[in-house]
Amino acid sequence: MNILITGAAGYIGSHCAINFINNNYNIIVFDNLETGHIEIIEELKKLADIKFIKGDLRNKSDVENLFKENKIDAVVHFAAYSLVEESVKNPSKYYNNNVVGTLNLIDSMVKYNVKKIVFSSTCATYGEPKYTPLDENHPQNPINPYGSTKLVIEYMLKDYDKAYDLKSIKLRYFNVAGCDEKSRTGEWHDIETHLIPNILKSTFENDSNKKFKIFGNDYNTPDGTCVRDYVNVEDLVEAHRLALEYLIKENKSDAFNLGTQKGNSVREVFDTCQKVLNKKIDVEIAQRREGDPEILYSNSQKAHKILNWHPKKTIEYSIKTAYEWECKLREILAERSG
Ligand code: UFG
Image 1 (tube, rainbow, N blue to C red):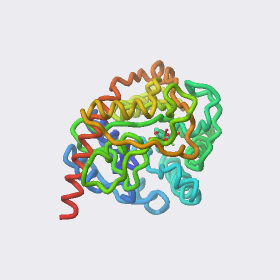
Image 2 (image 1 turned 90 degrees about the vertical axis):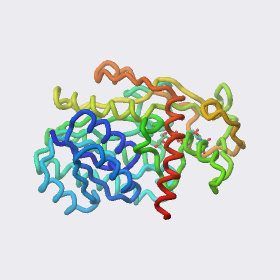
Image 3 (image 1 turned 45 degrees about the vertical axis):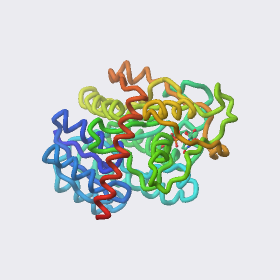
């Protein structure tokens, strides 16, 4: 079976590629290398004889050629911009890449009779929680353009199923954490906004990064800091494989939350980082970050029952592997700069 993975040079897409290679799928990886990295593709190439195509989903001829020149049986689609704050400042960039790019992709899928797609969606499509844990029936009212673009795509996929029989599984991620057990890939964003990498980066002496900041400790939570559901990236990508196999077997569209069903506060994650690294880390309390909901954690029972997905890895493991990756990343960057 030939599986196209878009955005395979990025954080989650590259972990998914490793999982699919380990499970003997033939993969074709597509990425424009704008936020993804060629070094990650080189690592993937060491694992299997994969085909890498550099291209952009916004460019119709890139997408057309991709389907014309390759036999593709199904698609796992990650390629997207994903910075919430940037999406508020520049929604055009987000609608153009995420929505128009996906439109080009699914139009070509229909044209070339490729009728199965697993889509990387987000809990940001739910917006401000009305209740927790959030299940798949929670109303979807995104509060930022990033979440809106992902919801528009969910709508497009629903309509394409009805009209063209394109079957899709929408996977709504909570907070993805950790890196590959062998540091072959990891979280590598030129602009880093996420909690765990920011804590870890602050521990490297030569980094120009400032002291780690907790954004607000006056929330209505047990220790005053925001609560999130941190799901390990290797567990998360395993759900993509199960979702694809479900699609192949059942040929039915659906949507699933992917989280651990447990909440950890920012303070707890910070303390766990200190424990895992066995190191005291400097911290300062800063103002709340705009648009951060107080508490977000998932009800992922549906994925347990229907996909037989059972995330196993602990947050300690995620932090350990994320730290190993941070060390490796410094080697890669040193090599790059000669
Ligand atoms: N935080 C800090 N300091 C930092 C970084 C983050 O205190 O340096 C806090 C945030 O305020 C928040 C928590 O840590 O309370 C988690 O923040 P992240 O940026 O790691 O993650 P988010 O919950 O904001 O974002 C995640 C995904 C997004 C998705 C969003 C949906 O990473 O892609 O959930 O709510 F859109």
